[in-house]
Image 1 (cartoon, one colour):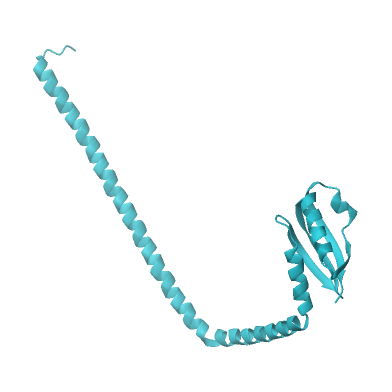
Image 2: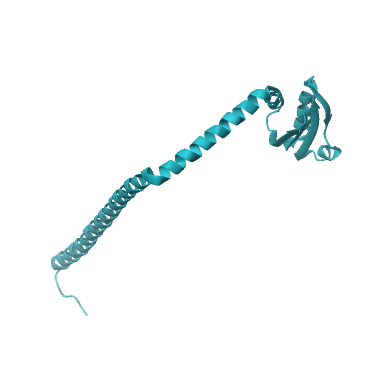
Length: 175
């Protein structure tokens, strides 16, 4: 099809066509912004209603706890307090144990971690992790420096690996 319109008319038609395209794109952008605003508004309404619901549930739960469950909790707390008094009494009787644990923890080099400490009749068994053999040797030397620690024994298998060593040590204490 041949376009016999003058050049000025062709330019006017092109401008009108671009105006229509820009108007459509602008309308789509406005539609998108309005839709996004509505979605965000719906989300905020949902969140605020959930918040109010949880507040009401918390108040209801709090009121329910104030009844018989409160007495049960108070009984448990009293039993736990009695246990804590017994533990405190036991700790004060065994001050040497606290001092020994302080000495052990004071000799732990950086990077060495203890995973278990157990004792029975002043015989200690410690297990842990050392990143290198040198760190384990430093820990052993620190234990040997303590005059109260006797018969310090690392199994030979602990010295085989040069890195990532899972170790155990036993020793007795003179007190």
